[in-house]
Length: 304
Image 1 (spheres, rainbow, N blue to C red):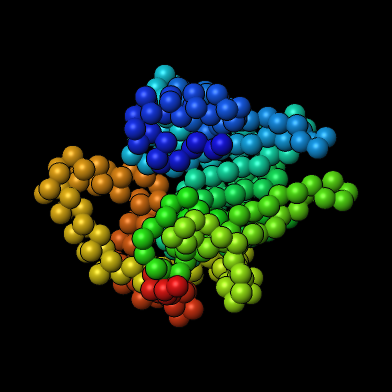
Image 2: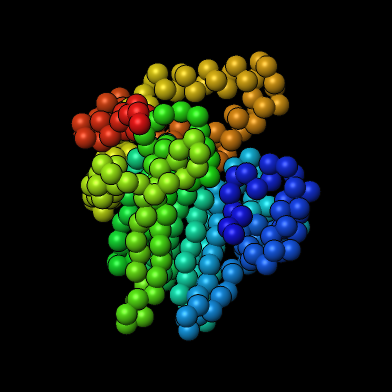
């Protein structure tokens, strides 16, 4: 169980400790969060089918949830430290799978800072890097042969809306095949009112083309894809988002201030707003290819 995410401390330290007790009582190993930074960073070492492997899990520390030297929290957004651990685990002869909770929610392509971090992990020696948090499916990039899976989809977060991409995702089946080579197979699913279901029919047939559409721009054109989102977001999106924060500030000052703090300090929001400001000031918000703008529009409008 990977615990490095922005909800593991929703019920405070007591809730986190109850979670750890529950997992341990049922023999479920976990990683990614702890009573201090050392515990939060600790990899999970396993033996699997004669292979020595390790899992590493870190997260953007939204709402100041990153662990400190003597305070509980998650393994926060420290790609450089994660790369150091990957190298160390590789020196132990382990295959290293890195699971990262990061990225901007609901968009079809990863922000440049996420792609840069995933590529650094691949260069450090990761066997695969698997991301989640955006709540929608994103593509897969093979970088020097290492699969970088940017977002699996919503999975456990049921939302009572009918937007297609928040109702569609995929698991990643990882197997050790012939020649002791790792194989990676996407297993698409839909999120229905009664739970998860494997995709069937036309949606199943359409999924490979969707995944290819999300993956094709990643090696060379992900910056253009990001600009497509900034164009879609635009001044109207910024005004709407700030309006929500101001409304929260009026109703519950503590909540409103926390929302503002999150926009300033959390990597995903900081990167988003900084890029938006810079391109807006430079009058470049509309400078994005039509394909990038269209798929962003589709992600926020297409219904099941």
